[in-house]
Length: 491
Ligand SMILES: Nc1nc2c(ncn2[C@@H]2O[C@H](COP(=O)(O)OP(=O)(O)O)[C@@H](O)[C@H]2O)c(=O)[nH]1
Ligand SMILES: [Mg+2]
Image 1 (cartoon, rainbow, N blue to C red):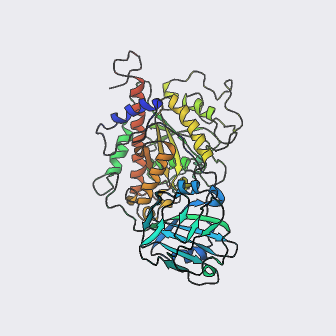
Image 2 (image 1 turned 30 degrees about the horizontal axis):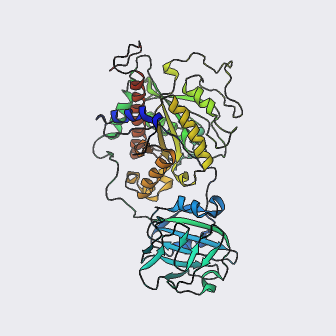
C-alpha cells in the first residue's frame, strides 16, 4: 500500500467500498498522478550482430534496456534508480576501440555494500573481429560481485564508480583475464547500458490477479452484460464519462476503437490511430458506443484527447483538462496547444451539469515505455494529478501494448498475470505515478488484427468494468446517504 497524504483520503474510502463482491474482478483506485512519460524512445546502441553475440551468452532470453548513460547520465545514482531490484542484469560498456564489455549478475543490485556470492555472474567482452564473446567466470566459483551503491563492481572492473565515463580496473584477482582482450586497454567509455535479462520462461507459478478466461463459461458475455446494464447511480446521469489522458501514441484512440469493436462484433477503427510523433487526435472527442446498429448507446462515453506532452505549450494543457473535467468543453473542440479554451467560445459550455462532467480519469501508458519515463513527464503528470484530485475524480491507469512489452504475453494473452515482466511493469507504474497497483489495468488493444479475439476482449472489458465501478464511487462520494440533494442516487 502506498503512503497517502491528506488529499487522497476520500479516495481511499472509495477503495474499500469497492471490495463489495460484484464481479470477479476488483479494482480500486487511488487518485494520484505524478505520471511520467517518455520523451525519448530508448534504444540500445547494440547492432543486431552485437546483440546476437550478447544473447549467445545465455539460453533463451530477451534483453530489456533499463539504463543508458547517454540519456540518464554517467551517474551512479541514476544507474541505481533504474537498475536496483531488477533481478538478473547485464551491463554493456562501449569504448572507442570497438569493445563492448561488462558484467552479468544474476542477483539484484540493492546497494548493500557487501560481497555477493553469485556463481552465475561473469565478465564478458565482444568485438567485431572475435566471432565468439569472451566470457570469464569468477575464479572462486562463488564471489560474483560487490553490491556497491556506486555502480557495478565485479571485483576486477568497477563501472560508473566515480560517476564518470570510465571504468576502474581494480586488480582484485577474482576474475582472470587479459586487459587487452577484455577492453583493449581502453577504459574510457563512449556509452554504457544496462539490460534486464528476462528468461522467456519467466513465469510466476500462479497468476497474481484472478481473471476468468474463456473456458470457464462466457466471461466475455457476462462482462458485456454488466457494461450494457450498468446504470449510473445518479438519476440525472445516464452515461458514465471516462476521460482518457496520456502521451501521444500510448493507445488512447486505439482503446476506444477496441471497445467499440468488441460491442460491434468486428474490428473497427473509428478514431484515428497511428504512430506519428505528434498527436493525431487534435480534437476533444466524446465517443458513445452502441452494442449493435439498432441498439441504444451504452451507458459509457469514452472521451479522447490530444496527447499529454511533457513540455509546456505542447499537447494537452492542464487548464484544458480542468475544463474538460468540469464539463465545459464540448465534443469536437479543436485543441490549441498554445492557449486553453476561451470562455466566450462556442465550444465552451458555461453551465455544465453533472452529466457533462468527467466521472473517471484513465491515464493511458505504453508498457514498452515505462522504463524511460522522464522526470519532466513525471512532473507534468503530478500537476495533472493534483488538479484531478482537487476535483475528487477517481483515476486509473491503463497499461497498453502488453503484447509488445512481453513475449510471453504476445504468445498468449492469458499469461498477462503470470508474466514477471508485466508484474514488474505494474509495480513500476504504481511507484512512478503513486497509484495503488490495483489501479493499473493491463490491456492489449486491437492494432493490426482483423478479427476479434476473446481473451483480448475479456481484458479490455474488465478494464471498462473497473472504470464503471470507479464512476459509481465518484457518485457515491458526491451523494452520501441522507444527502438532501435532489439528484439522489438510485441506491
Ligand atoms: N501492439 C499493440 N499496439 C498498440 C496497442 N495500442 C495501440 N497500439 C498501436 O500504437 C499506435 C498508437 O496508438 P494510438 O491509439 O493512435 O495512440 P494515441 O496517440 O494515444 O491515441 C498505433 O499504431 C496503434 O495501432 C496495443 O495494445 N498493442
Ligand atoms: Mg489518439
